Length: 193
Image (cartoon, rainbow, N blue to C red; front, side, top):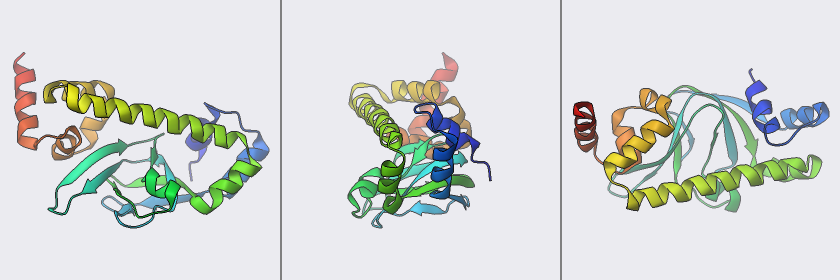
């Protein structure tokens, strides 16, 4: 079980003592998921947040007509969950599914408050990463209505070059809010430039 990336990730924002690391590791769970397995399904309550040690997940909403709208990919050193469901303990609006075999460290909702009491700096850590996620989410929303599909694709490609190699084109298209055919057309245009 490789937990070093998890501890390093936290220590990049707040410094844990070895005793605090011990407490944290006692209260977290290492879990392996297979490709296509769900970490949380839309409609279920998200009971834990997941730090990705290895692998890739997609967070998406499935509409009543079966359309999948991907809002987020998460890879190594990122977090994955339906945060709205996790925080409010209400049914999830999103599913989180593994795009690859994925290893995670999980922290259960029932344990996180205890961790905040035992290791107060973790509350600061989670505040900072939540703020960063909020800012990123807001920027993505603005890009959605202010940029062309080609501009959104180029931003995605520049921001996450490794992701395009790891996820199928139809998933990238869903994330960008376009069809896979239109994404192919954009790629052909770029190749000719």
